[in-house]
Image (cartoon, rainbow, N blue to C red; front, side, top):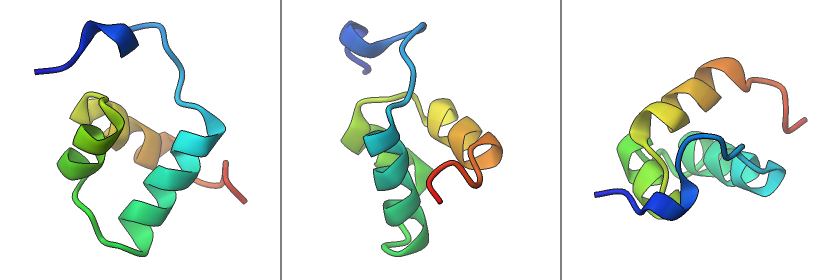
Length: 57
C-alpha cells in the first residue's frame, strides 16, 4: 500500500530521476522494486522511464 504523503500532484525530483536511472540501468532493478524504494506507484516509474529519457544527462 502506498502512503498518501506523496500522491498525485507531486513531481519526481531530479535526485529521484538519477536514482531511477541508476537502479534501472546499472543495478537492473525492476520498476516495481524501484517504486517500492521511492514510495511511488509502479506506473509513475514506468512513465518516468518512458518519458524521462535524457533528463539526467
